[in-house]
Image 1: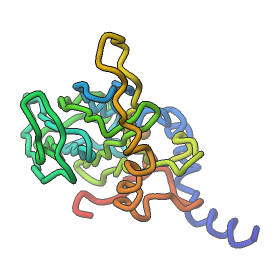
Image 2: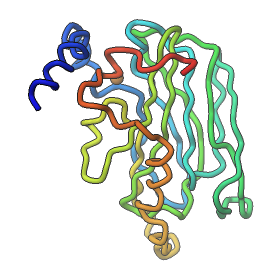
Image 3: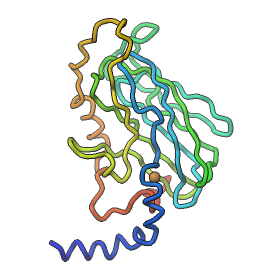
Image 4: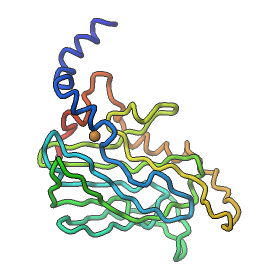
Amino acid sequence: MRFPVSRALSRAALPLVLIGPAVIGTAAAHAVLERKEASPNASYRGVVQIMHGCDGRPTTRVSVTIPEGVTGAKPMPKPGWEIATVKSAYARSYPSFHGQVSEGVTRITWSGGSLPDDQVDEFTFFARVSDSFAPGATIYFPVEQDCSEGGYRWSEIPAEGQDAKALKAPAPAVRIVAAKAAAQAPAAPAAKAGAIAIEGPWLRATPGARPSPAATSPCATPARSPTG
Ligand SMILES: [Cu+2]
């Protein structure tokens, strides 16, 4: 057991060792959402923060996937960046501010800009968190980050009981909490679509996202080419 592991390390881990301090410095950064909590039946301001480029190269494209159950997503324009959206049918219809909705934006992409590695920026959208999430659930907004060369896929979902900090390329996560306003309608029976039902599709949608033990940190090496 030990021999194959050390052989794998000798091949794969050398670049990681060489840039070790840089990895430690940015380990908590990655691509994240500024607001880490949202409530059912409430709007959510999603601010994707890009904290670094790819091994010194500038970020040129940021694309966020809006998960099922998050409706009415709209990007905020951003000077210097072009916006593209993908609209798809939802798995079901959801109540919204203007009646039921059964389709909407499921992906937002900003491209054409150039964010230097030593600067940070934010890419903002608004959406509505539906009643299909119960407090305690976590929803994920996978982010693709492409640079002038290379890129990252922030799409890993922690397994049950796994600490997201252990992931090499965690998907930005938002925890569902009960709305604070006690005056609102009594707690909706939202538990019918609990965490398992919601997280299942993402686990299936990101096969192979779990890193192998010898995988290098995505902060160390561009994980995939933009065309990948
Ligand atoms: Cu990072």
